[in-house]
Length: 596
Image 1 (tube, one colour):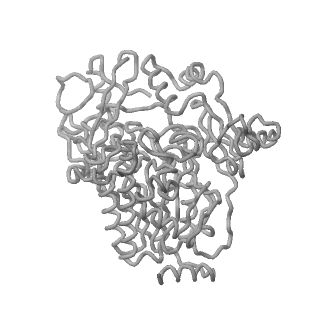
Image 2 (cartoon, helix red, strand yellow):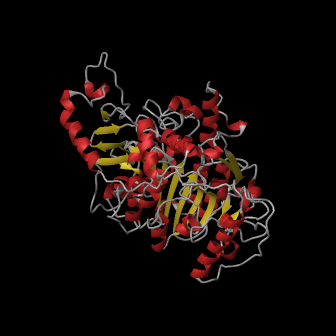
Image 3 (cartoon, helix red, strand yellow):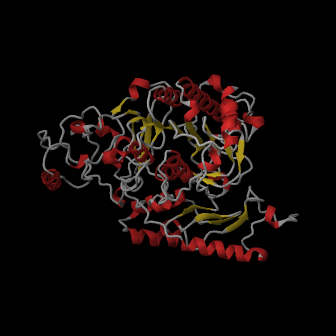
């Protein structure tokens, strides 16, 4: 075609490309290495024709690395920083945890907005929402359509979470919280779209945004193929024998069709030729859900390749044509590369500018990545992690996984009241008394991280090299580098507000549950009736006195509605505090409290 011929001409002659008129980042949730046709042609060749074609026509990044879990990868993309520098190295953000990406970290949406781009987010957030300041519209996005938590039902748009009350009085008890979880800007809209799959909703909304005018930064964060695995029967890939794989294939096919819609919108709007488009997964696939990581070892949550090496490619009119790039790329590099393309490179982040390798542009300071810090967990999570330097990768394992440590901590907090130091001591005594097995692989020659001591003629191609005498110097060098890394303090402190965040308090919708001063709304209950959830101004979410899920006595004096939204900061602090003291003095024993 004429468009393809022109792209080749620009590449051959090295003519500088203009600043992208459109920057699109598409993240597919939990898509494994073997979940695209170009990596699994026999299984999925018919399921991902658009993905396969765009990857072949653009730049396929065959050594692209994300983090092992959702929150960490999204935070890395948005900030350009390793999760360990954000305090997000240990666990995903659970729905009622009062934490998020630190507010001092500037998001890509904020930076591009300063450069004149209209910023839009469609899909999954999962970066914190306990206060309005942590929500998408407060972090640089001009418009938002999607969910605030990490997942939910693709048709009903509801999310369910289980909270385990803290303290021995509640041992063996758990509360289930469920609520609607679909927002359009600052208004909850789940009911308007019930019965429509999230992939269809997000693709349609994203296409509409592309058709609008002006410079655009669009992040399309598909909720698929994250569980629950749901797709219409017509999409089932009946050539596959495994039932779970068929269902997963159907979800993947829906995403592929959504990407086709985005491509069509970019072409129809005239944006294609000046577009820079990234498509990637946020972590490896989950095998029990029907995903595949091909021959790679491990899955989501693992530091082995199957948990972090994911499908990714660059597309759009500015992408170099028909290239397989085998250089190292980390998810933070998407942040750095985007800023460089937009004319505002940032050297104070962990991401590296890969624009010279991926896009038609004038190369002034071409960079080559030689190291990736996959992660360093905090001491409370066993100090595990992984480091890639050149061809070699060090895996420092814990005896148990991050999720197992988190669940054990929750269990211990039911037994007694522990401070952080005591909890750390117990976890180390019970779970981490001995270190996990560390490994060393030459992942250029042994990408599947095989350790086969029988019949292996070339150790670099099929053995764990950690204890191999020929690789002692490599091991010592990587171990010294790993031990020198200095992660920030973890934000995972097992603090969970539980019932204070229950959607029942906010009109049945997952909403920010703490005010601007970080007090849970439910602790001072200023409203006599719950209002329609809205994140804007005086209509901020407030709990209903009648529908409170707290265990306070049923017979109590009703409070007059007090509007403090325009009060001085002192009054906004003093009134809730005084009311809290007043109510606390009148409550009988047994009130539910979410303790840190």
